[in-house]
Image 1 (cartoon, rainbow, N blue to C red):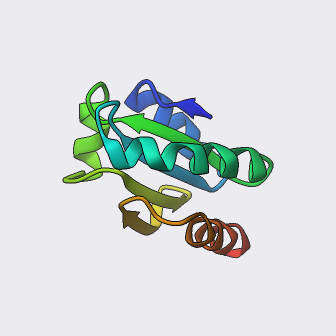
Image 2: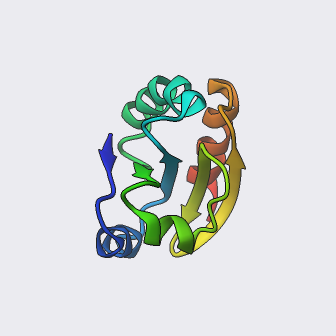
Image 3: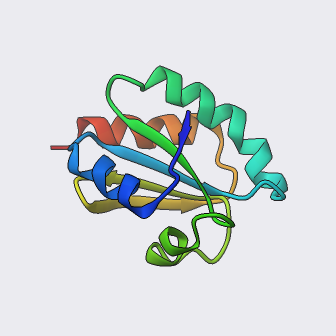
Length: 107
């Protein structure tokens, strides 16, 4: 799973048109570390249909501000340049999978 390293990289990713799942995290965040293996697993599972990216809120402050991040982990499900759904906290794998399935099947 790749990390987004700049706002321009994010903008390019969104322009590609593929659904995007963003995981805003920090290296010091316990719940983020707990969630990471699940996100990595789903990233591999959905690699053909969803761009799964992680965003470090400490290094990508501009992007974190753009999304109004107040707590982490913060999860955003996007299609085009539009946020379809957002969630926070270390969600169970089944809930994340359902959200990704819903994102993929959405027109």
